[in-house]
Each structure stands twice: as C-alpha cells, then as structure tokens.
Length: 207
Picture 1: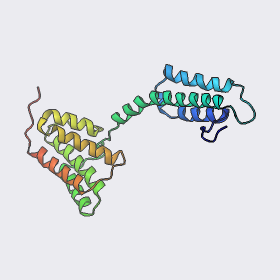
Picture 2 (picture 1 turned 180 degrees about the horizontal axis):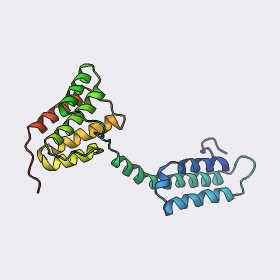
Picture 3 (picture 1 turned 90 degrees about the vertical axis):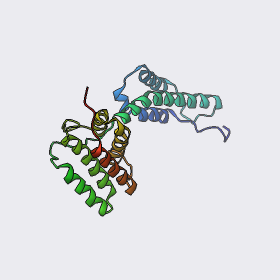
C-alpha cells in the first residue's frame, strides 16, 4: 500500500470508533432513523469477513475509511441539534429557597468579593442582587429556582428599556456560574451599571 494512503482501521478499531461516538449521552436522548442507521452500519462492519492480515488493497481500505467517515458524519448530524438544544437550555438557578439574603446584603457580598479581586463571586452575587431587588420591588414575583434566563425574560417584559442588558447579565451569570467563563473587573462593572439602571427604572404596568 502506498505511504500516502490513509490508515485503514481493522474491524475492532472501526467498531470502537463508532461505538465510542454512540456511547455519548446525547444519543440516548434522540433515538431516530439516523441512529438506527449507524447501528446498522456497526452490524455490517461486524458481519464483514475481515482478513486476518492487515488490509493491503487500496480500494478496500478506502471503502472502509469512507464507511467510517460517513457513519461518524451521520452521528454528528444526529447529535448536533441535541447538543445545541441542550446548550440553549442551560441556565443556572439564581436564588434557591435557602438564600434569604436581601438585595442590599447581596450587593455587600459582591462588593466584598470585588475588593478582594474575586470577580467570579462578585459577578454571581451582583446578578443575584439585581434579581432579588426586582423581587423586592415586585417587578417580578419571588420564585425560588428561577433561572437567570427566566429572570431576565420576566424582568425584561416589565422593563423593556433594560431587556437587552438583562439578557446580557443573565448570559454573563450563566457563563460564570454554569460554564467556564472567566469573570473580570469589566464584567462586575457592567453588572453594577445594570443594577443601577434597573433600580432607577420604572416598570411598565403588566397588561
């Protein structure tokens, strides 16, 4: 076989590649014809009478590689919408039932964290202060377990001028609390500005 040909997997390697992809949890969430197609491909790979020696025919090798690539592409197409849907749903809970701190107390905690250079805590606590302040003013109803995105949507309906900033604040909170975003002083400053704008805003009367 020419040296420039791709590495050809044997039966066990090909099955391992496909089985490894299908073992990811998103496939348990979306059983479909495409998933069954990939399972069918695994069965066909198992049924092939593979030679005991390494494959030497370039055409046979390319066919096997093509089957594996197509199967993995189909697998990615199946999992892609699941991954995107899951990412879109991910939003961290802002305040739980055990957190009874007032907005003023949450702001104080954020200020203390900012003074210590703990920007992650400062951002998280400051967004919590924004939400708790909205609850205290009855702009939104107190609801333990509400996510950051839900809080932003509920408050944005009453404070349309701040809706975009509230969404950005929720994204920041989620990225820091639920994701891997690294917070900085600018992020804390942005939430300080959001808090001040929300406090000064007059909510629209709910229809």
